[in-house]
Image 1 (cartoon, rainbow, N blue to C red):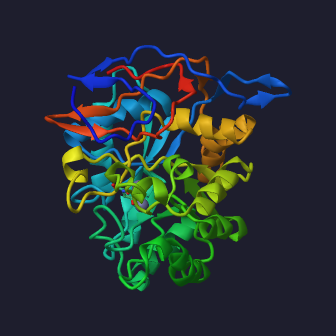
Image 2: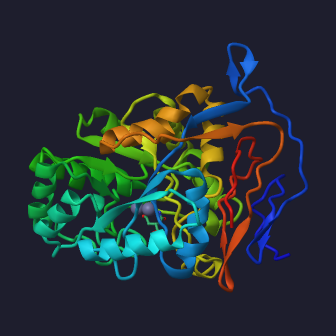
Length: 391
Ligand SMILES: NC(=O)N[C@@H](CC(=O)O)C(=O)O
Ligand SMILES: [Zn+2]
Ligand SMILES: [Zn+2]
């Protein structure tokens, strides 16, 4: 068994070797006192099948390795376009969509919802045609240099106004990585500064534009969405509801907790959890599951991104359980997103159970000769999805 940095505290995950799940010994755990419903602990829950409104699937061998984990639990996902080279045109999106369909496990009815990567040379007609044919569900704005594979992103918002205006006309949402790239702005402030310097002026300029502020990590971001009127929503990741910056940095640096936007102070984590369980329809789940090989993460300059697809739903259930809000999990994971995107909710459902048996979540998956580490919350997973991916 491969040794890994000691991120696992008190939990034995199983290992994936040669593509097979090798379960850890079944463990009984104390169910604790969370999940009470009128005095009775809720230990099972059936919800409409969730969707993931922010997902990185990559391409090639990585796509083949990670897709089954998402397809096992989620009905649809908004597929991020930050490949190298990026998914810029409708024809890029059609080809990428086909590669995803080809990589799906047999019998899966998972639906990829494609996005286009906004560049300063994006053609408004191409975007409008892709939207009209329902090939794409959104366009993604990466400020150039803000995050993984964002070099072709936008430097000057003025240059993309014609595209944004066309999107406003046709109601096509803009998904936004909301961080400024100004090196003088502290990395922990980049989201809050983006709202003020970029997003608010942009929304004033193109008032009809429907915007999703992706992976909100701050209370300023939460408040911006809450106060932002009808044309805005925010996705929340599970990992930002679980870790704060201490988990990343205190007592040793933990590269597997490094993602962008970087995890913030505890007060922000609590604000994200409060927003998720509030019942406010403008917040929904976007895991931002972002796989990178361990070889590229465990570097002097390691990649940003947490691979959460295998345990995202179980963790979301656990967060809602801890917050005493299991009755709102379905809104957050399965209903609010489709409502914003003007799509019907899933017709199928999944069953979540909390029966004292740990879910079979691997600590890592293999991709060719390399491995991708699965997000480790650092505590036992009490909930699990009853179906597990077929590999
Ligand atoms: N979230 C991340 O840390 N990384 C994402 C990019 C992104 O969503 O910003 C990736 O593509 O790896
Ligand atoms: Zn991002
Ligand atoms: Zn992302």
